[in-house]
Image (cartoon, rainbow, N blue to C red; front, top):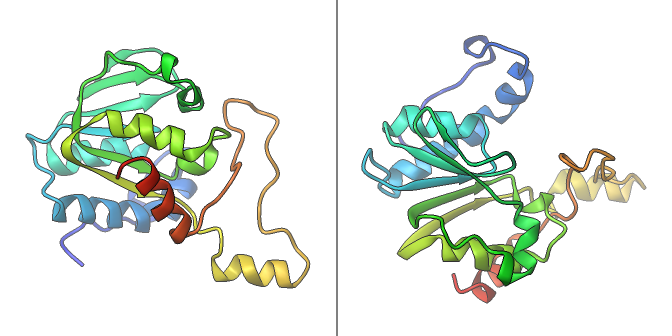
Length: 188
């Protein structure tokens, strides 16, 4: 791998310490991947579903990183946040047309949370990319070995949809082959 930063639970403070420590390896992987793809201070980067990763990208690259998700449009410490529920992507007439275009769009651990067909969401996301822009998409593997083992034991490896509409959990996880098909169908 490259010079991606290392994370440890001891270096993280606050209520989200366990969550962040659990996801530290994927954060490090994504930051390394962005470095390999040429992310710099000058890059226009959008993070869909703002999280601790948004701040880590800002820190790592010294770049303004915009975000897209719930919550009103606003200026952030180093970028802008744009409100858009990607479930609304099912209706092209509701797409936001006032957003900038980006060289890099990061959609990490987000796709599985939509009840809208992923090809519609990905088509909207593609509209946010400059020509030859790059989408980095990360999502749980629906067919991971540990999930197959649970199914073989008669256990459901997937969580129930939550009652909280602002954080409903996972509606659908995807396999790598499905992601390739969905991406190709959206023009990637």
